[in-house]
Image (cartoon, rainbow, N blue to C red; front, top):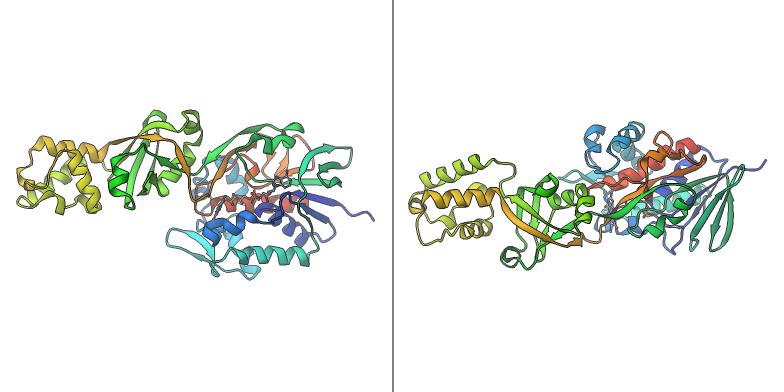
Length: 406
Ligand SMILES: Cc1cc2nc3c(=O)[nH]c(=O)nc-3n(C[C@H](O)[C@H](O)[C@H](O)COP(=O)(O)OP(=O)(O)OC[C@H]3O[C@@H](n4cnc5c(N)ncnc54)[C@H](O)[C@@H]3O)c2cc1C
């Protein structure tokens, strides 16, 4: 009897996860992974600073989907089939227990991405999954009952294809998918930090992190909350990265040059900040302003904000005129900055864009245009914020696809 053959294009997170789960569920299928580079699972290796942030401790599927600027609606359907809890159980079953960090990120106890790689490589060996490296796919063609896959190593014939080539800003990456008839949403970067143009704040306050700010891109009506880090070139940290993902398209369209405002006290209203400042004055009439930061703002940031409001440290809080205190409140509430370009965050980039979600059936990850062609992972127009969400997309799409194929 001739065995059914499934070819997986791409030896990354989703490719391996799909291959292993098909083999675990149907040993009768012949599976081959084609990987263009010499290295397998190279992103897994460097992920999470070499520790691999496998997923995020978020068992609630509705909350989980809020971390995906693109694909939110489709992922609801997908996570109903395979979610974070399933991921944790899967890895545990393979002997890899995941630990939860304070911010919800989940890593292997080993703190080493190599344990995930070893687990995948051991399983592929045990399950007799064929792996061909240095094998780049250029084109695919569908015949009556099979596909012809054109590679630099010749033609591979297969009954099904699972395309797991990941994301890339270069649209040429997706050319063979386009050529077979699929729509590709323009690939652009997501997850980056904001650059400023030689701003005084970077010179004087680099290295300071603020617990809870609100950043607003007023031109686009987009905002985010959370911790922020002042770097020597601009701003970074969770609130900035989240905003870069949710505003990826708008920021690309304006060439990463736009104004934004920071509310240094999270989402507090202007009147609330004014009240806090007046109370501070009332309670510390004879104190010097710089030694009394408002609401636990970092001391050096507080000094910086006071000096922007022309409040010096040579008069007591009690003698600062009301007008100046109102100006300080306004600066804290709506501090304006201009973005001048972006910087990749620790090389941890993700692609916004990819295969149009309308052309994929999320119950199986099968193409709605070409039967027996499937897509998993970052190649589709789904991306998440940092914290393990991108791998969760890889695991969920791959598992759902594997069940459909097996
Ligand atoms: C530095 C860094 C750190 C990251 N850390 C995290 C993290 O800790 N947690 C998290 O959730 N996400 C993280 N991410 C994102 C995450 O790595 C990706 O979302 C995830 O790897 C996507 O998996 P994938 O299988 O879709 O694609 P990939 O892992 O990118 O794999 C795609 C594979 O396909 C191969 N390929 C491409 N084109 C072809 C072709 N034509 N023929 C054959 N092979 C091809 C590529 O060489 C590659 O090996 C990180 C990303 C980076 C860059």
